[in-house]
Length: 388
Image (cartoon, rainbow, N blue to C red; front, top):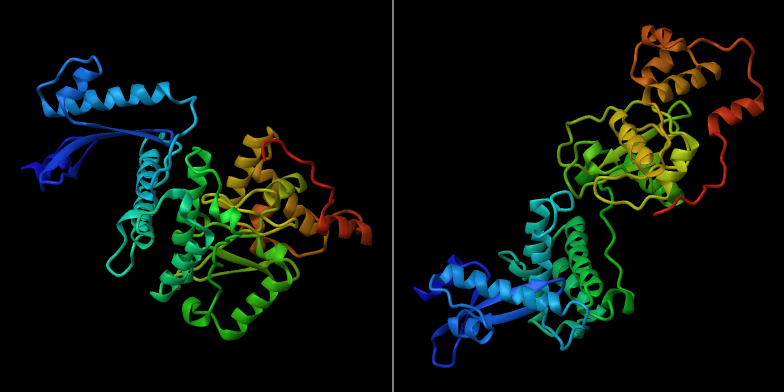
């Protein structure tokens, strides 16, 4: 009966006594600080509170008293050293108490819980691997040992990187909440393992095509950083697109990715990116749900450029019209001497639509400088935007 009480009563866990019996305790945490008290009316009386007969009501009363005590100690520094298990539990609790617009997905929460606490059939969790030391005893070499352990189990490169990213995110949270003084990742110069590279057996693309992608990505790192996240292409979480520069009629980029669903084709429309928007996107940090673009006119999906315009407008207050951008780009290609059929195929529209947009050839031929300006755009030094 006692073994199931901690599962039925909220905020409660059981602790084994010396005589083999179990006692119930209530646990509360607030901004990295934690407090524990026995689930008893005697403790409530010692705090000047009324006893509660019902077990669930008593647990709620003890938990409320502990939270009130923690709120009074918020301004004081954390005293004492805590163990890894306690810090992980506070970290996971902090994920549950966030507002809905700040909450990460349930699959991410379950993965972090699996990596830090639960583990899998053949993989130990970070807590079991470290054997629950004091939090400030964790060093960068321990993270390297954990990385080597997961790598020996045969996990993919993307899984290895995501597992270690969860551990690093947990340690950074400990530093932010002031329960850890120094981040072992920065102190020991620990870096995450690299992401997976394209291989023929994984991607389904020919060998020469994959070799070209890898060679271009090494010689043009700026181009290779132009990564669109999976939400823009239908890929699963953790699978990123690799954009690389290729000579397709002198303009386009080849888009390829190591994806599980190889039959699904990607169809992107040519959409221009204004110079200001290019600089803004180039300075963004790559996060899930966002993407980074190169500093040149780049073919992106219509959904992708619409998302970029929306983010840019929210950040700077400068409004761009997607339809106006597409018309401007079509007129640029027409001014360069391209035929209507080629422009229509690149834009994903028909020549009839281009005529409805009033895309007509220029009255006078362009000079070499004007063609270069239209092709490359006016590259100005990016103005540093605030809150970046």
